[in-house]
Image 1 (cartoon, rainbow, N blue to C red):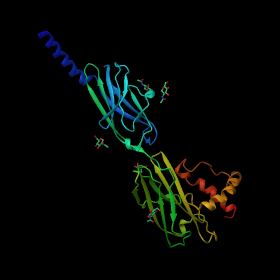
Image 2: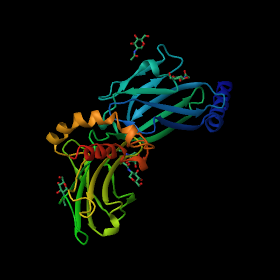
Image 3: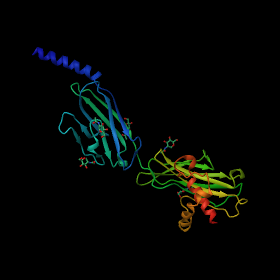
Image 4: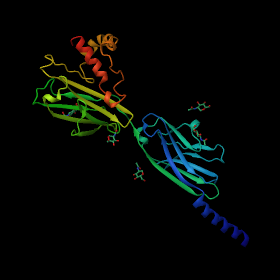
Length: 304
Ligand SMILES: *[C@@H]1O[C@H](CO)[C@@H](O)[C@H](O)[C@H]1NC(C)=O
Ligand SMILES: *[C@@H]1O[C@H](CO)[C@@H](O)[C@H](O)[C@H]1NC(C)=O
Ligand SMILES: *[C@@H]1O[C@H](CO)[C@@H](O)[C@H](O)[C@H]1NC(C)=O
Ligand SMILES: *[C@@H]1O[C@H](CO)[C@@H](O)[C@H](O)[C@H]1NC(C)=O
Ligand SMILES: *[C@@H]1O[C@H](CO)[C@@H](O)[C@H](O)[C@H]1NC(C)=O
């Protein structure tokens, strides 16, 4: 009787020591770092067992356990049904759980809880996982007039297509970002947001570079989405027939009318504009108008 009590006390003592030393540095890492709606994510549970055997690892969304790995059980992994959580068992094990078809409603706190064998020391790591819904379309940029005389106020409005979180909108005047513009956010019924930004710019002759004033609007969501829209304004002196072109929201009938000519001319442009890069506008911030430059040249060649 006394002997068994002694063993229990000593094993309890070992458990306490074990609890302090056998398990540490539990970390939950999400890959990719930016999780996209409808996409996949691996929730990786790193830990330092210090040589102790693993008893179990549990993954939670909020307080609800949805996946458990217990190496000594058969089968060693189990999924607990949770609405909207789709576990890919083929890519889940004792280190990670792999989720598919992630929905916006799953954004929230995820945890992994590691328990060491024998000591039952337990540590939990929690991480907030946001789920991103990039806009499906590019921004729309509109100005109140087609041309401006120096001294007039150019009023324009750029709006993003709905997404989550709200798109960052940056207005460019020629090459320079306009710092003073303020973005306002508007919720939609489906839990998304669209953003809009106003431009009020006093037009001066210096703003026309080689006869052209370009207003650009670049919409970004972290590093997963980037699209732009531009408007060009020409000085009356250098261009008696001012041309106004929009990348988005342009008149669709005139666009389709010109598109076959545009496509045809596209083949000849490398000869006409030597040295001009042909990256798409979202390869780098500095190149964001390349696509429209081409269209612009094509239209002026046909006298449009
Ligand atoms: C998992 O693997 C099994 C057997 O290899 C296969 O039949 C199944 O389609 C796989 N499931 C997924 C989601 O890849
Ligand atoms: C768990 O699965 C991932 C992906 O299939 C793999 O890279 C990793 O090595 C596996 N880990 C263990 C402990 O089996
Ligand atoms: C996630 O956890 C943090 C810290 O425990 C807490 O402040 C926050 O409210 C939680 N968020 C949600 C959506 O439960
Ligand atoms: C900007 O455009 C959006 C969408 O067309 C519109 O709802 C909003 O009222 C406009 N804002 C201003 C100040 O014109
Ligand atoms: C918007 O820009 C700010 C400042 O650069 C940045 O901290 C934030 O992460 C951006 N948000 C999105 C959705 O891109």
